[in-house]
Length: 154
Image (cartoon, rainbow, N blue to C red; front, side, top):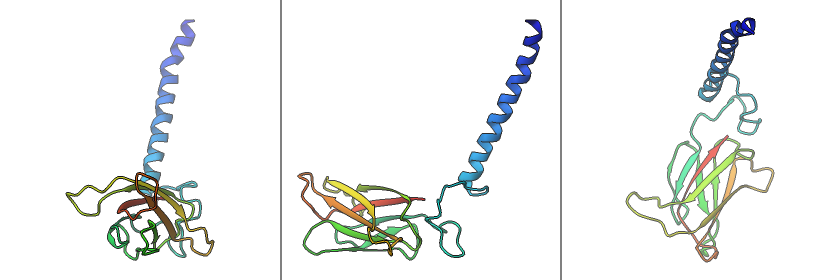
């Protein structure tokens, strides 16, 4: 029994070293200094660009105008003038296989947007891999134009 107790500190040291090595690898991948195994899954790549050179987010007002963005070259527009809450956001990189996070939110500081619902999806047409469709509704689940914030994580 006393022979086994001698190896406990060694085993704990090995476990600690492995934990530190794994944590360091995770930090390196998060900072982009190591290989991002599967983090982009080939979707956000453009010729000559391994990762987006900008942050993929937008703030859009009710009429579809881009108020702020983290990536130059991003465009937005309201797809209909009938108040159907259908918007298009086009990023300068592919975003088809990324994750989308959106919320109804006022585009002006100090204001509160009317409550509602929001859904984000990639453009269903395969030849538009940089386009995201955003749909907004009021609290009665009736399509309505609402300002929103959208972040894309690749």
